[in-house]
Image (cartoon, rainbow, N blue to C red; front, side):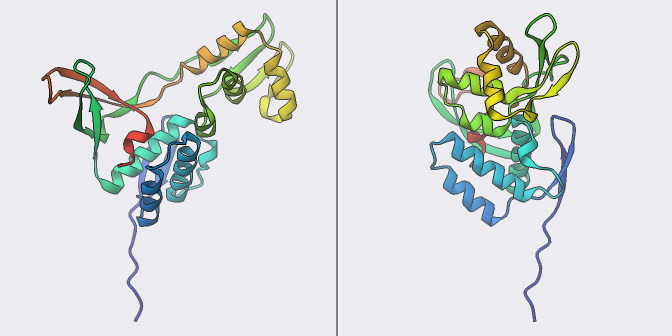
Amino acid sequence: MSIPIIVTPKYETKIPSGKVVSFRPFLVKEEKVMLMMKESDSPREIISCIEKVVQSCVEDDTKVQDLSYFDLEHLFIHMRARSVGESIDINYTCEKCEKSFPLEVQIQNLSLSKEYPEETIVMLQENVGVEVKPLNADSIGAYTGEESDVLTLSESVIKTVFNDQNVYNFNDFTKQERVEFIESLSIKQIQKIVEKMEEFPRCVIKQSCKCTHCDENLDIEVEGLQNFFT
């Protein structure tokens, strides 16, 4: 006599970049990891944990390290919804009275904060430019807000470099060559790359509610993976 096999359901979702991904819900082993990660204050540790958990639940050939950050957000939130239900309880701080109150947010309200940019090219000179891609999870996790991080982020979002003769895949260059290219740019050129990077959307849940303290009617936007650990 053997132990009965538990069949885990499979689901599909279309991530913001357009790919349909097959996945399963979190199991106990993933829930245990997430409970431990709730105690961490390190963005890098949290992102690394989420990447590992999401990868273990993906049921097709999707490689999490190749996804943009908002694709990872989308997958994680949908996995969480299929694991514990279509709503998640968070604490929200009222913008008017600045007091916090418990709020139930609905996963069905998940959307993107803005449209995907139609143009991803940044011209640095008349005949030299770069193609910008969304930030990945590793770049978000490593970001600490320091001024030096702006250069690192700029390096991580460049997909190609081109002139009027050729197009070069930025990752084909060595780390030293990529750093030298970034450091050769002016502050205004870096600013143009950062501004283009900020045009990419984030996953957000938009919902209306009423503050339980001051009765103010609120149109809220919930974003950030830390809100979806519980």
